[in-house]
Amino acid sequence: MADSRFSFEGLIAKNAPEARDAPVVKRGKYDFAVAYPDPASLPIDGLLDGLREAMEQEGADLALYAHQSGYAPLREFVAQKLARDSGIHVSADDIILGDGSGQPIHMICETLLDPGDVVLTEDFVYSGTLGQLRRFHTDIRGIACDQDGMLPDALESAIKNAIGQGKKPKFIYTIPTFQNPQGWTATKGRREAMLRLSHTYGVPILEDDCYVDLRYEGESVPSIYSMDDTGSVMYTGSFSKIIAPGMRLGYMTAPKPILDVARVVKSGGSVNQFAAWAVHRYATGHLDEHIVEINNIQRGKRDAMVAALGENFGSAAEWSEPAGGLFVWLKMQEEADLQAIRDKVLDAVDVGYQSGPLFAPDGVSGKNYARLCFGYNTPEDIREGIARLADAFAREGILNA
Image (cartoon, rainbow, N blue to C red; front, top):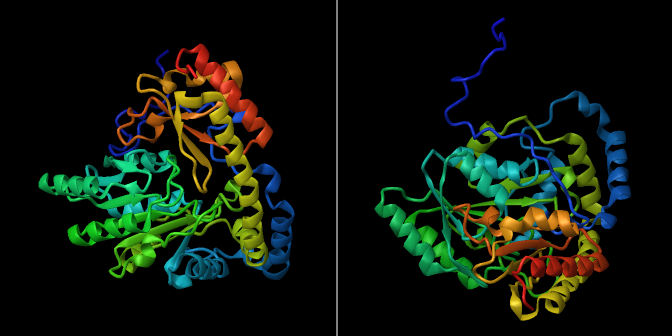
């Protein structure tokens, strides 16, 4: 009997992403692979109290579809927080809530990108955004960086080169504060230089400020958005790292022409009203003190990881010492291939990490790099995990401390 199952061959959209099986996720006990926050400090009781209060006051509104831009009181809170903390003066109507910061980034990509468009970003950058850009068949070009941020000469050269090819970049994507994965914070001078180039060549900027609240030391640097007076900057932020990733709440603001299209391309209507209610009620009364609490916790974890790297890796490696965020960027000798041994290390010593190519615009560079996240494990487990990682690297012949 002939196979009667329907075939979708030839029906899949030409611009659809490449198919892949559902991933099998294995987490190590010493989980340095993903930027989870400290689980013990999640404000469970505060979120429950906030949700209970909202249900008592507004529960009947669950019968209605919420505003597409998201719960208005939470947008008002975001607008006030941006004005106070980041010098960004917008109204609640200029804010769109999204599922984390990933959905707003997706909305901006869908608003601006056609296949083959050039986007410029750091030479190693958040893998989630790289995935979004690849989804839209973008020509992603990495810009060399140092500890102060993108190198202005390299950025200008890349812009000129793209324009010379008839492909003026659609935007510059940057994570200027506690950059993921490299950990640095762009100086005010580098941000000003990026803005000058944006204005000179007519290339807008997408500023991803997901980690800005996670400062453990040093002075804040003005947001790029706050320094712009031309309307060339788009901005995204998130509650994921300061409340909980599982809440899936973030936000964006941008010039009106972008917002008006982004609302149309936004899928699924409003964000989850339960989550928005809980976050709003909790944030309005407790978020500032919670950020102080989690930063004190995470500072200790960062210190534990940096100290453990010094004790176990010595002069055989280099690593960042970030003033905030959740990442340490580890560099081994040039010939080391941390990508090839990653799964073997996870199986052997129960330590997870992500290797450099995951964060490379070309998908292959940086095999001798690894991102180590310190947010989830305790300081004691961090010290044990780094010691185990060093032992595993030594057995693989890539660590001779």
